Length: 276
Image (cartoon, rainbow, N blue to C red; front, side, top):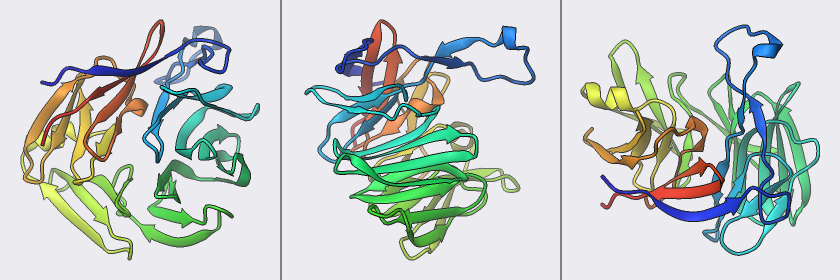
């Protein structure tokens, strides 16, 4: 297996080069008394912009660019962060939880461009294009980056999981319960859906949330603290260990570099990459 390397670190700090410490209630399995609610560190999201720079945020106060100085101040009313997309320091999107559902706010030239509240689960961007993914349905809307108006809608299968953009196509892992198979679903720009099931129990066991895809359309997944990718013929190739990773923090670059965040004395962005 490949050993993880540290790409960047960000300190806990109230200043513009760091993130302030933030906690949130731990996920609950059922009804809990208020005094029994346990607070845990908020998950830190890591994103790579179009220039290749890494950004981190947990939804409080700011996003911080790793490496060279740079930060983006977040609105004071930002709720629990659900997703974030960064094209550049001047073009980015935020998705947070509000009482009415999920709120998406998109910024151009560093200023608010549009806002939508709806049944959203994911915010996607690719080459300056913006998509919102329906949480309780199959619709994926490509939106005008300047106005937020939908320009086209494609539909995924109901058994497909969270989608990812790869070269203008939407990739996701689907689960066929009746056949006992998981596989990869691809939605073409014209809405055509292609599905490739994997045979055997090993891909089925691995391909559960969290998932990511590389530029070759290969899925990556976390299981028992390890990351693996699944080849087109269904072989599972273990990449390396990530330890106790929050499911929301796995990211996969087009070249197959797996990014994740380790929280301790500060925020460390680490990576794993398997050749080929």
